[in-house]
Image (tube, rainbow, N blue to C red; front, side, top):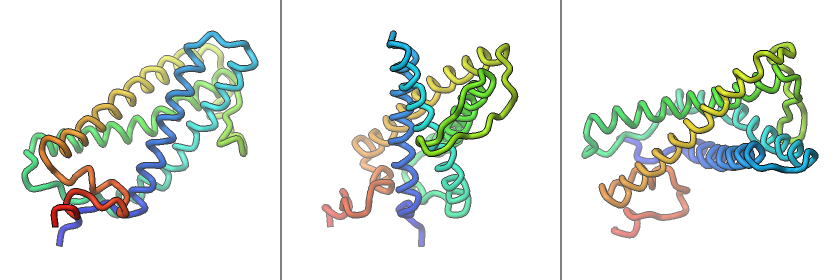
Length: 187
């Protein structure tokens, strides 16, 4: 029998990462684009790092879980091209979810700054302080931040398309089980 729902652990990891990524993105965007007093700027960057580094630990759980448990089968009406695009989109999301915090970690390491994790402890630097490389890692981090924003928007739009236009249950497969859903309401 095919599985139509993600596991509870997969759902928890998905939604926790979604919240963490959105919060880190917003904090990073505003801390880098607003003209703030130096103390507030420094605090907002530390907040961004404290939130963003959590994704590395969530990924350490999420990737093995996904590899061991996979995803539910797609609805049989989904065209092959769309299934392939979804797999590629998910792959890119995972790559960006890993590369984005790693590029920030490299940027901070090259610049000689600390990397806090949820305000609890600091990550060790990935390299010695190398100011000449900091701008390179900064650019990579910025490009990846915009790439993940685009990928997340595409992910959300496709989930909504499947739900509202295709009348598929793919969105409901990732929602909490207590919610009920279209299938439960139709029976």
